[in-house]
Length: 430
Image (cartoon, helix red, strand yellow):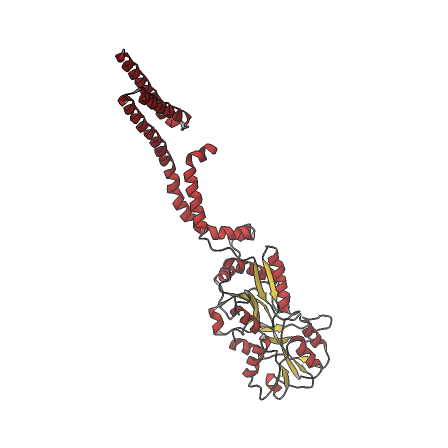
């Protein structure tokens, strides 16, 4: 190996230079840290973000979770570049968001729960006219959806007293009688949902026209909370309840590194593929119901699953190979002529060196023949001895040994010729 490197060092140098140059053109590696906007502390968005954080920590990607006031706030933070990823309720985004953001897909249903006090008798949501209704805080997805649903039923701030309260706060106001009804957007495991459905004097409204809402708004799905789903022992609910549900979706900036999108999709699958009270296994994650463009990485993932490299290699190595393979063809294309040129150029370098020594030998022979004094002859003879010593130290491949020995023989011949000439000149003077 040492002899090979010594012989073809310049070829190795150019190959390394070529590899370095091509790899400098590689797409930058994925970031090691991302910021994710979730929701209010203790809510389902926050819990989901914590699960993702734990999963991505296993592949050395640090996720910093930021608690926010909800989906509208999350979208604003994405647009301002404050975060890289956010959990967002479908139906909240507007056309301006489509230019800068991608959806990686929906991860679970988060229904609209309409609870009312029992003394209020209504056949459908139109019966809430004149009531005090908690519709969610400004900046929350619950508020956006509540406004849409109320408007669809011909209700507005003039016909309904709108109370800005969300989650646990809205539930508490309903329990205390400060509001007549509450619109809550949450998963069935939310603590305030469980509390309200067990409270005497509070009823969960079944939205009988749920299919109509879903048909009118593609980001909504009509779902059924089955009899006994929340508690078979307590028979909660006591009968099937129709709900309308947006979905929670993972939204990212369009410039988020594809490798980070891929591992987020893996985390989404690992977390949500087993099903829940409102959906069967393998329902989520899904590109359905998203109201933002699905990223190319997500489309590829839903079609083919994890990449071939990711199935067999750790994240870091798989990502490097995935970025590097696109340079393989140009690298091979450029390396082939360099490697093939190595032996001819090496032969040329060896022969050139021998030819240069022959040129020096002819020059010394001419100087020796033209020398007029002993001092000039001695000087030429010393130069010839140095040339002879120099060629004696050089190493060449076996295939060039004959050329080297031929040169040495010719140096010795010229030396003998000059020595003979010196003797003849000395004899002529006697």
